[in-house]
Image 1: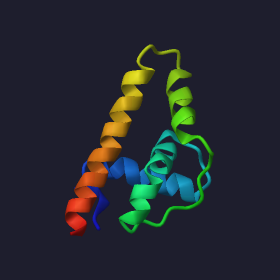
Image 2: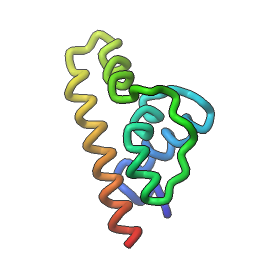
Image 3: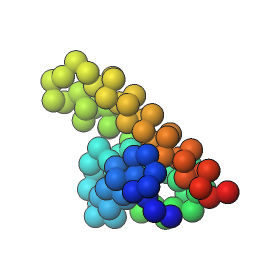
Image 4: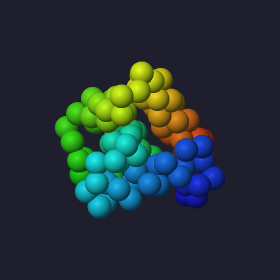
Length: 92
């Protein structure tokens, strides 16, 4: 599957790469959040870098002092869901 052809594919590809390297980036945390669904779609995911990726991602987004952490978090989750839906459509 060509990840780049799907919405958010570059973010998911980066997250997969970061997870493989053991790096707890925003992208890696996002992929970890989507892990169960992504695995059902046939993606191989390395072990999670945290046990609470949702909270860790939000905390990372809030750490920059911005008041927009909630909006940014929701935007990333929407991107993940768009990717998963597109991947499901392509997998059928």
